Image (cartoon, rainbow, N blue to C red; front, top):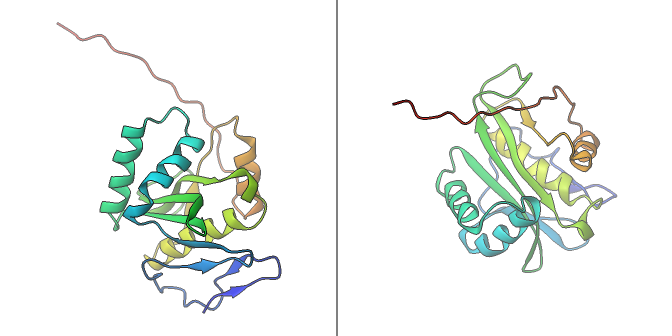
Length: 181
């Protein structure tokens, strides 16, 4: 049902459009890395990859987020890239009611996307995104969105390389309020 392109990237052209991927799905790239849905046993390695993406994220926060992703499959899905027994990338996706410039609701949203440096530019990141896009399309959603920090130009280039268009830039603000007596 899946085909490999000459560069080892996965093509889902022959998977029926609304077919959900079975759990866990294993999609091999031609150099041994497989893309599959995350499972509970992945938690320690998944948390290690999350720490590489978000250095300020505590282990407790990662454990809480991972538990949420695994326990709410109607709203969240995570795909991992495995080289043998070692995880080398992940993509956390979610359902969001709104994403900037999207015309439909709900939309699939890339919450976090990371590939270990030595596996970048090999098709692993693209394969993770394609798996998430298939998950979203399987739920009947017609748009996928993502975001990146303004200074994360590597992420900007990666998104553009796989067909995502930049639609908005923003600066966020906050203010701590004093309790009123």
